[in-house]
Image 1 (cartoon, rainbow, N blue to C red):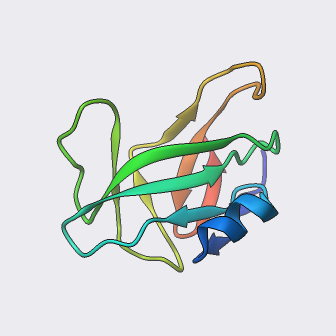
Image 2: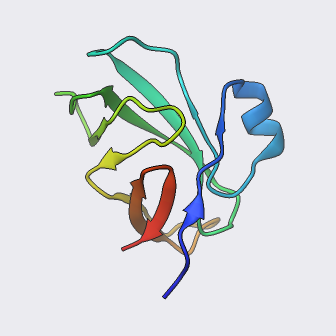
Image 3: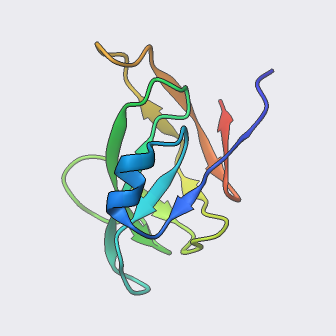
Length: 105
């Protein structure tokens, strides 16, 4: 079993891109009830940066996949699970972001 990986939450988008720490995230500013972009570096270690649409304490109704984010910037949780599809950069990763830790499904 793989140990959970701490999701480093960065507040500066450029720093997030520059550092590219495995499993790190940056969440666009938003208020409760709004939608936001959540950018993350794949927890598998491949370095791929992905964007998903999250709702602050709700699951948005939008085209494509969306996630419910608990609103916490220190210990974020997403629902449902996150699935990074296999591509030329990443071998694929599927798991959860729970209480600030990435966990393999």
